[in-house]
Amino acid sequence: MFDAWTRADIIPRWFKPGAVPLRDVTVELRVGGAWHMRMGFPGEREMIGTGVFLEVDRPRLVVYSWSWEPDPVGRESVVSVHFIDRAGSTEVVLRHSGFPTPAACGAHQHGWTACLAALEAMFPATSPAEGARR
Image (tube, rainbow, N blue to C red; front, side):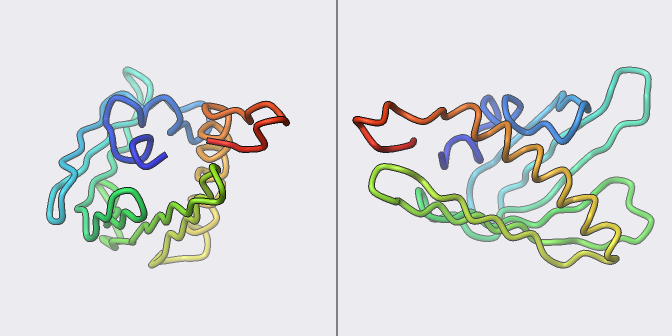
């Protein structure tokens, strides 16, 4: 699960906030390393997300800053993702904080909900006899 959040070749498979495709992802996975993603349809307005990794503790935690380009407000938020082993399953605890407005928080909540649903679909439940999820 940690790799799904931190590898540029896997992120586009689940990071799907609605119908907007993720077209470009770069990840320099280390404290102080940068990440970058470009979303949008060709010929239309693009959304560019950028940030820096603040904490990396494989396989338990990743924390990174988040900002949009261009951002007229100029605020940076912080995403922290904890990966908790639950007897063969992984519980993902996501916290995205530091939004400039309640509307920005709501928009990100909607996007994260869609992304997490796509992530869960990538890791279907195992058979009941095995009793675990990836």
